[in-house]
Image (cartoon, rainbow, N blue to C red):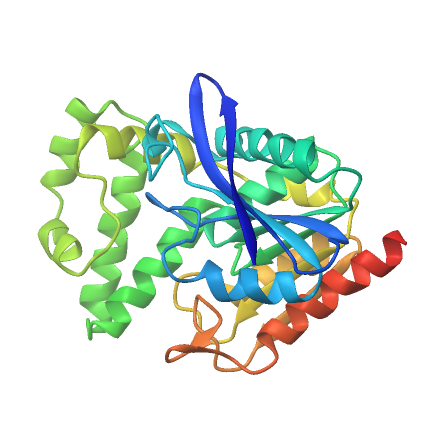
Length: 297
């Protein structure tokens, strides 16, 4: 693998990344965008083996540290989904200056699925891949994730229902400034227990403001205008994303001739079972990318 540093600039922020070239002449360019939180260009350990498979398939691959992560300036908490999509577009433009005249695809993991959907609606790309990318909005996804977290933590039905009501109320309170909304959230039943269970509760001003910007996002507008092939990959055992509902939405709003949807048995949120990717995951991914290369000529 031949890797070189790559830098993009957007909105006063310096975005640091890498561009990796395959051993043979590249037939496509794929930009990989990570999931939620302060994610780097490798999405910790998730992206390197996927990147290697894409390189073996003949694609050049680039990815960037989010704002305020690794070599990038700024703060990831400042960027809602549209702004992350604009950062992605700046990174893609920088990569296209180096690798010219190739079909371009976007790969987004988890929250990155919303980002690449949004970016594809704004920029001319050849194909899109969502990796556990929800077709529901962030609020519905977090509500589902909360319910699964409480179930896995062994909360009984009544307590879990009460916990979900508290979580829903916190989401409602995001419409208020932190200094008004958080004291009200702090007084809700089971709030400490939700925090202890690892539920997403924005308990500081910056995270509160970020959540207030992100939670209303609706991905269906971008999905309805999708006019390039979309590979949507899900794990059957994902406890973060409502897979069945996301699949139903995709089948409803994306043109059938563009949608390639796979729900892989035993796969978790990272399409893994244990420490390994589930069978057929990398094969399905690379087969789709090669098909897009072949279609582009």
